[in-house]
Amino acid sequence: MTERIPILRIGEVLLVSVQFDLEDEIVMNLQEDLAAEIVEGSARGVIIDITALEIVDSFVGRMLATIADVSRLLDAETVVVGMRPAVAITLVELGLSLGGVTTALDLEKGLARLRHPGSSPGRA
Amino acid sequence: MTERIPILRIGEVLLVSVQFDLEDEIVMNLQEDLAAEIVEGSARGVIIDITALEIVDSFVGRMLATIADVSRLLDAETVVVGMRPAVAITLVELGLSLGGVTTALDLEKGLARLRHPGSSPGRA
Image 1: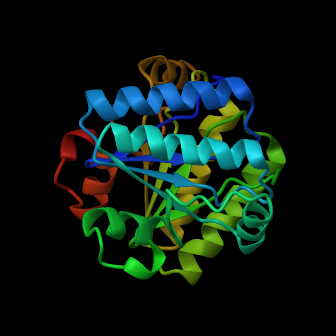
Image 2: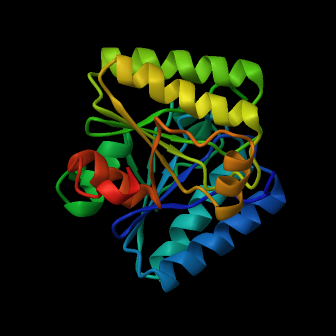
């Protein structure tokens, strides 16, 4: 099986569904693939679904922040969707409140957010 | 990590991204979860993305056919997207031409197909 997480596309939005434990190499590949895909495909937004993640550590937290930072430099907005309550609590306890990362409850709300930026400022 | 593949939702369409080798239990869980989600969430379509699958065997081929059959009984259409050329060849060689399964090249075309059934009869 490939060591790359597939990147799906819906219009100008890229979609990544994180489903398994992330090792260093997979994360490096994902960051590179996403950056290349944003530039080559003129993507405007990136949605990372973490519904499947029941626990996160600082490694995953930093990955989310890095992807958001890189995407922003390439003029694309990142929205993290599907975060479980326990994951949010863990991230804050780790000191990773992901200031630069936009979140939405689920994929549909994430897509709406990228289509209508600023329509839901409470969750920015 | 969970032994379940997450099911995402875009409107009335459920989206499953298959990213790793599928074991019996994961497939059983997926079939049950999808059927439950179709009924509880009144979903009209199911998209299964297999971009990440570089090889398939008859087990995966039968899974795709079974999901399509179950979904149809529950009044939802299944579209398989992201199939690699080599995978298509293998499926046919295995005698699994997936007669009841609709395919589309990528997620975007799959979504369009579910929104406008019959608009692309050539790939039905």
